[in-house]
Image 1: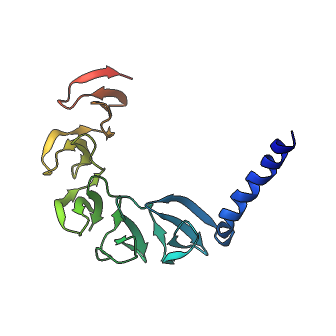
Image 2: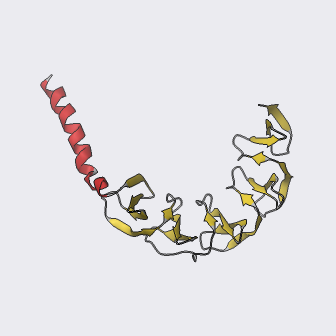
Image 3: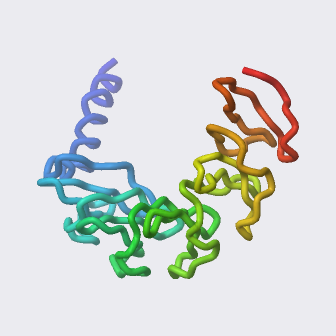
Length: 194
């Protein structure tokens, strides 16, 4: 019984000692790619697992690291930085999403497109909205606001016709049209209604 009591009292103290630095911030995110997003006085930065500041708290907003790169907002524009804080793109984006499979959705001049980790445009900024690729397709909207699915070249595989389109998972995706929800496959065949 004595051993159990000692163990119960020791476990919490180890946790407190290991994360003592977290009290210095208003917000601490989970550690991803070796860095945690932290916030203090409405500024975002990134620290290592020991609480050492790696990327100074100088950003208005920031996402969580993914694939060694993160989108951060400085002023009104977004840019991407690497895990050392070095900019890999200029601060030219109106909106930015995390990298997935080496590409990310970003918005410029009110239109969405896809970029590489070096900032190279892979799919032109031509969509009024877009999401990340899953299972080889990405939901995107045309200028009229209808959702469809594009391939990695930016060509429509499923023409824009939906009021909403979710990402594919397990070979199917949820879509909405005329206030009805249903699931389609990658050939646009209706699998079932919700």
